[in-house]
Picture 1 (cartoon, rainbow over the protein chains, first blue to last red):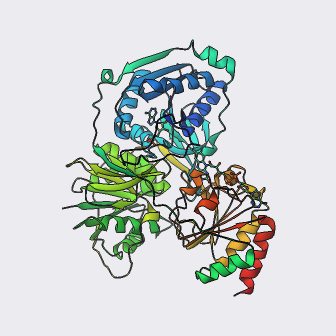
Picture 2: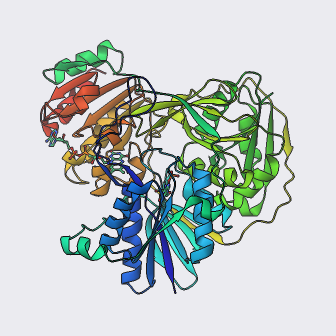
Picture 3: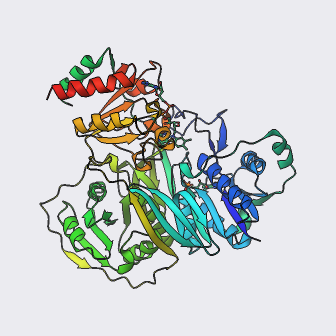
Amino acid sequence: MKKILVGIKRVVDYNVRVRVKPDGSGVMLDGVKMSINPFDEIALEEALRIKERGEAEEVVVVTMGAADCQQQLRTALAMGADRAIHIESNDPIEPLTGAHILQKLVEREQPFLVILGKQSIDGDNNQTGQMLAQLWNRPQATFASKVELSAKAAKVTREVDAGLETIEVDLPAVITTDLRLNEPRYVKLPDIMKAKKKPLETLPVADLGVELKTRVKILKTEPPAARQKGKMVKDVSELVAALRQKGLV
Amino acid sequence: MSEILIVAEHANGKLNPSTAKCVTAASKISGAKIAVAVFAASGAAVAAEAARLAGVNKVITVDHAANEHALAAVIAPQVAALAAPYSHVFGPSTTFGKDLMPRIAAILDAPQLSDVMAIESATRFVRPIYASNAIITVEVEAGAKIVATVRTASFEAAATGGNAAPIEAGNVDVELPKHTRFVGLAAAKSDRPDLQTAARVISGGRALGSADAFKIIYSLAEKLGAGVGASRAAVDAGYAPNDMQVGQTGKIIAPELYIAIGISGAIQHLTGIKDARTIVAINKDSEAPIFEVADIGLVGDLFSIVPELEKQIAAGK
Ligand SMILES: Cc1cc2nc3c(=O)[nH]c(=O)nc-3n(C[C@H](O)[C@H](O)[C@H](O)COP(=O)(O)OP(=O)(O)OC[C@H]3O[C@@H](n4cnc5c(N)ncnc54)[C@H](O)[C@@H]3O)c2cc1C
Ligand SMILES: Nc1ncnc2c1ncn2[C@@H]1O[C@H](COP(=O)(O)O)[C@@H](O)[C@H]1O
């Protein structure tokens, strides 16, 4: 069966302005809205479209995290994924450990394509897809804005600093998504009902035989340096005068 | 003692300024010895440039036809083959470095720190999370090799000209994968200053309404000798190319002057400009969040303000 594996991470919703706890021990997460990482929604949308074009047969979504991550897996199933796997861990997972876990799953599921987000918007790491590709000894096409599949390869357009780069990678491969790859579909109510019946498997992380290493310890969390509130000018002449005064024009 | 290997970024025979910023970052580690590695089809010119950067102790060139284009899967095993004597491997937090460095970390079984903003010691680093709404200080376990990407907006470029570090050919005897092939690069050609290094940047947002209307931004930028940026909404709508996107998932910049025109100031956009010296906002909505971070704000219609601004600036010259 031609499978696509998609990573789904539960993160603080992108509309939330995250605040640091006064004691510097982390950020305030109580009662904050949680969502699927936006790049992972794009990853899932791409996988679904590939399947709908008849170029894949099954879309499997996977998350690593605590029990509440299952909410996002259910949303992913409602979007159209066929099956979900929850790798359960209550401890934080560093990107390289996450990549090792995904690699175990890849061995088990044998997908021809793994699609992940380019970065999770909580940790802003931008690492997991590349690490998985290396551990798996397969190609990567990161920051994808267009994906065209043929029998043995994928032609991927990538958003790079210089413009748009196109590469061709043999399959199986890892693709990570950029914002303009697609626009994810909305979930419809009946699909949420149907998703309740789709298979969701839970695996304790210990069962995969990956050691959970913590090699990077967070010593403190601080708010960013605040910018001083500036002044308002009333017209263009005042603006130009203010810029001249600062020696900027 | 810290031995730091920096992977040079380059294109068309020229060193990218991001490399000089990595050198500055590396030099924050006391007593650091810094080597720069150049992977290219023929890297002599780039290596010569790297050797002139202050603080560089040596330059290693690895010339190979397969290095013609910077493919992460091809370069990563070569970097790893050189990495044994080094305690740290750094690359820039550009799309080149973001693509490459995690593959190196995976081969070396090393933790990676992304977007390093400050370095406190050989094992203690500062980096942003949550679109820079929180800044963390982290300590890496003793003994681990450390891979990092350096946030270029946070460091000045190392000075050039006063150094002449030795250049040697690196010996990497590794099999290179053939599963990844370069097809092409569609680069927007412009003679405007590079967005990531420009001292002045002018950005347009969704309010511009069309690619045609975006021309008023280019025109103003030309008068100011400024680089041009855009919000995600403007790029998504096709008013500006993707390489102009400023923000959490685009380019993070630190110009002397940033002018945001018709941009609301979403969290993800602000991440990209927090380090700008002076922020100017032009927006018709006085409640727009961009005004909370702007040093100078002007409420009004951009379509009358921008041409007038251009006129007054030109008149003053
Ligand atoms: C995962 C993720 C990553 C993202 N990454 C980025 C990123 O890297 N960079 C980025 O920019 N965004 C990013 N975004 C998008 C971001 O959330 C906003 O949607 C986007 O920045 C809005 O762009 P905008 O300000 O141009 O548009 P809008 O929010 O629509 O603002 C337009 C502004 O123009 C003003 N305006 C309208 N007409 C006029 C006029 N005639 N004269 C003057 N002012 C006028 C309006 O008052 C308004 O404030 C990301 C979003 C997500 C989910
Ligand atoms: N805990 C997780 N569960 C599922 N997928 C993840 C997890 N962490 C990372 N990923 C995937 O890896 C991508 C990049 O994450 P990161 O390297 O953390 O920026 C994300 O967009 C996800 O697709």
